[in-house]
Image 1 (cartoon, rainbow, N blue to C red):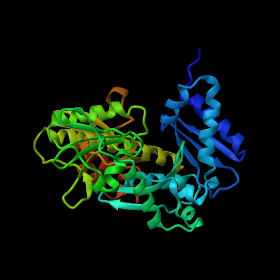
Image 2: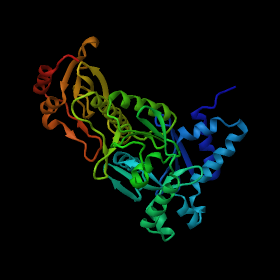
Image 3: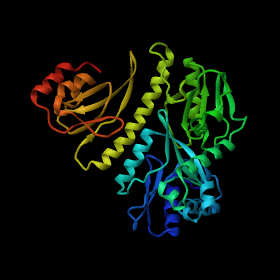
Image 4: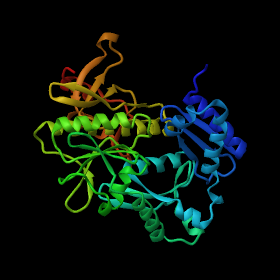
Length: 400
């Protein structure tokens, strides 16, 4: 028997979506496990983005004859939000955690698709955001302010209803102990981390100390008050295992400070705990650079090389780097060092060595430009280097 794959699900989603709305076109993005449904006739309508991870887990376990009806039920839920009455619409409201990067990247993608970014309801919680969304039986969608205005509701009402909903779904059985000093949120209902961010008064912890929280997905949230590196490593491993088939959220560790603000958890400069936190920073940074690299490659329309943010282990621990080839128009992520390549040399001699980032930028000088309004930071070098710059780089290189 042939296995039901993610790509087959993507095709089924596109076919069923077109049967519901013939104006829709679908595209499958295997790198991000997404299907996008965009209207051919309404360019101002934001495309629907469907992450395939959770729905694939559900659909792939169904008998073959039940798959298409289940997909149709899911898509009708996604595509027909106007069928909800005002009361039903308000009753669907919930809260999602966002990072600034996530919102910025989502808006860039909407603009890249030729659509207008519609304002939504967001509240800042330190370095994190909470956003009001509409959660129906089969799907979760961002709530544009204009949809709220259509039924005469206010932002304050929407936030109050969404907060009350998550409060009602929180009880004393919130935490399950997984290991010594490690707990996991027991609900796995897509709002586990949102409970903690949205309203701390009902987001209680099973320990006394300041929380260190790891939420690799919206449905997987682990917490501890232990700063031991072994405990933190186990917590991240357990988190990745539990979130393997969920849509990724964020790989950073988070904490709640004395002022009630959420921020990235960063231990002191000494100790093994710092190595765990640094690893999570590199993982998250690599993910963000990979997503924005894809955006740049699709949006530039230029014959340029967009470098990859890469990590390697050396005597000092993990370090990050990118590759620059002399005279090749390039976009570079900000890293600790740059590997310099001269493509005109014999194949086994093309890699000249590494140059520390600060020295690299100083050597190129005005030839390097920041890409404006990009998070994380990107730099572009579009003009060939002169011989003085090349000679200087050759003097600066060290073995990799």
